[in-house]
Length: 326
Image (cartoon, rainbow, N blue to C red; front, side, top):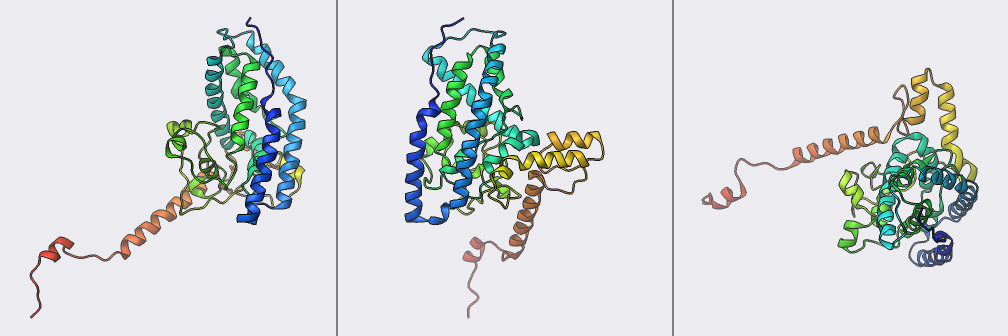
């Protein structure tokens, strides 16, 4: 058993920095574009962040206890040298990518994660919209293999905190694009704006936490376009600033759908199929929304091609042809 150092919670130390950055962004928005902040939306985000903190205090100990129990069955015993922290940070970020992708593709996980996407604004307070029900949705299972590999729970909890801190600053429209080399490797505000967008082109893209390379490698990357500004929120917006509704509306939706489902297969589908799935196909998933959009794009392209002027000879042939002038 390695000697376990006393590792702090990095998020606690980062809170003053969060506050300073939010105030700075508010000041910039007041000068450039006041529409970037909505007072009621900001208050809802702050309240959801407070609720998430309380929920974390109540459940983190249980998750840590489970991680410690699993750690006794580890394959290797990995120490606390600095390079293992780097390795753990990279692997933890990949585990986050897998969780995040599942959180958009499995409704049970989405019920917890949707709280983070529920704002129609995109600023640093949006980053505070974190789940209250992560323990219920068992989202922590994606990190459990790291303990079985041999990373001590204290190390994983520490690097997970660093991951969360990194993700704070990318929730902004104040920062445009970073240098090309940085955009190629790291998650950035530009990449993450795409992830929070409801435009069909952008749906279910850019799941990265820190390293955008996971999306590039696994086919879920989509760049932000200058000719298509992201529209934020969820496909069916809340229409309310009620904090409790924001935190629990999808769980309520699951309960209603399961109760009204005609058979067991449908009940399971309403819990584990993609958000928007229905047993009779009457609702939209991200796939159906994107399919309709792609069909419209193709139809428009065919129409544009039909409108193009045509000629029986090329530009070069016409340029070299003898003049017909008298």
